[in-house]
Image 1 (tube, one colour):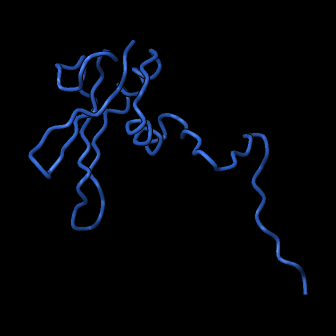
Image 2 (cartoon, rainbow, N blue to C red; image 1 turned 90 degrees about the horizontal axis):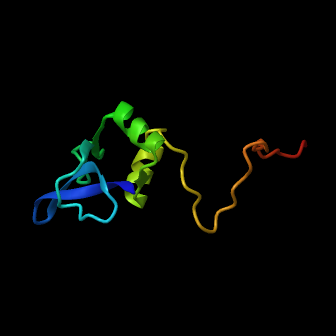
Length: 107
């Protein structure tokens, strides 16, 4: 089985991650099948975190059946490649049920 994981690189207290495709039982430090992108969790001066991702290859590996880890799934959900995972304890409206805006009583 193939999975998509984050492989940690960088120095102590300055992590830097590669988004990689590899066999699910192998360690993330082994040579990956393919590198899809990078993720820098340390915010820039403007407060944003750098993510570079090859969208076409990520869609291909998801289509082939690769399972993303939880952290990679959040990144892919923000990129609209996969639907977001449901959060525990939060109600999940069905896709056919439209979300209604709150109405205020007329005075």
